[in-house]
Length: 64
Image 1 (cartoon, rainbow, N blue to C red):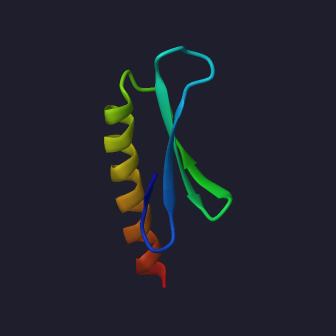
Image 2 (image 1 turned 90 degrees about the vertical axis):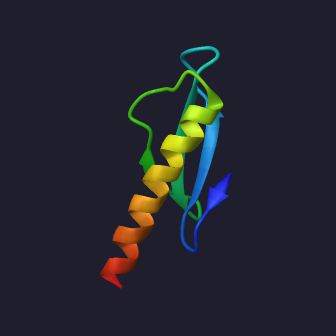
Image 3 (image 1 turned 90 degrees about the horizontal axis):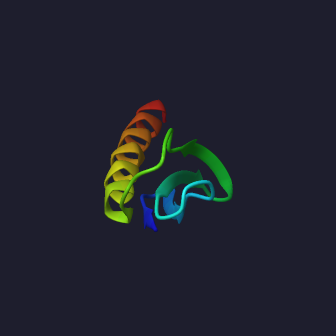
């Protein structure tokens, strides 16, 4: 799990495809974003989640 001041990301196994992974970005228990598709490796999912997390955090802080 990765986190910024407001958001956290989780990497979880894809329930539909064995051996693949999906990411979710949350603020507390509220989901803000989910991966549009699954990834072949956990590392790949983590990298994409980090990109989404940074983009969301920069957009969010710009609105404050």
